Length: 241
Image 1 (cartoon, rainbow, N blue to C red):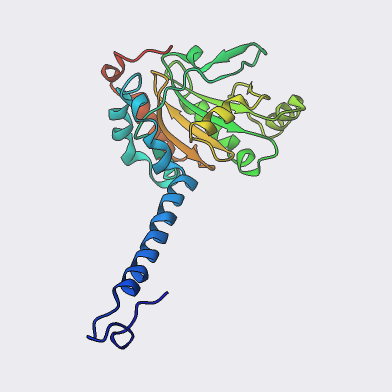
Image 2 (tube, helix red, strand yellow):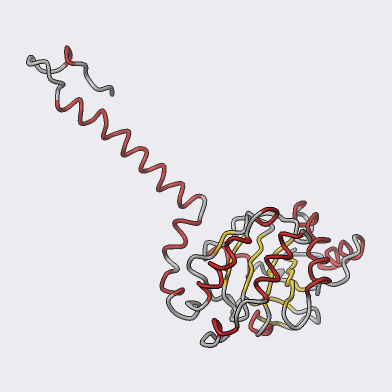
């Protein structure tokens, strides 16, 4: 419906009020609906709101760290989105290389780069050598790349692939139940593969990325080094449960 011209309006030459009202209200309402919908389709705005109570509790101390790292989420790691309401992720459960169950809490005290991948995911396969290189250059008592394969069948396929491309440093973590992915998805953090989460020593999210990145790049190295060097005082009140 268009806004009437003066000749289409009242005898006084003023636009008809009904036509003017509907003419601008409907487009505004439609635009508002699109913006609201986009917030939920693309995740960040809508999903972060429901996490504010979490950030005010266990992961409150991680807010400052995430903000400090934000300027380093650039270049080859620009797709990493700073956590504005960091979530506790220590409860994420999967399988250790020896086949025993474990959670991220078992890596207490380390900065972690959690990565979910599958052999059928082409971008995942492409970034595995970079993740392996990052583990080689920075892995140790302070940092670990926790790359979890989520193939639901034929676990030997993942091992064969990693050997084929020469991945040596990454531990063989797995989650054929898709529990980790589904948990991250339910919390608004995963929309596909690969998905990567930078996690501080307290088990709290610092940033999340959906999609691949060049994790062996100087940009990634600067980010990881800054996360490792984050003042421990910020974590003094945060504990892994």
